[in-house]
Image (spheres, rainbow, N blue to C red):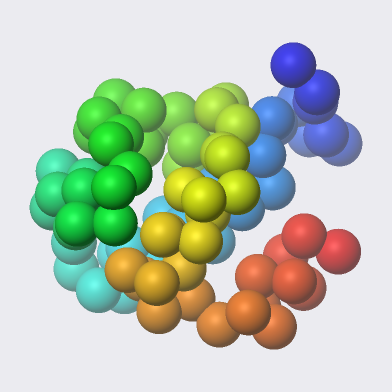
Length: 80
């Protein structure tokens, strides 16, 4: 598993958590919304994603962006 600067496996976990909290969604609620986009993630997996310890597949990242209304430019800035 590839690690980044601060020992994380993904760089967007903090952004996902920030947007989830802005929308006042519990982890379970976000997981249920993701299911509507054919993304099946448990709240435990979501916790690991937000902590940066689980890698996201591209289609999962797209679903997160749609459900949480994450702006592409902010996502790109996070990745860069």
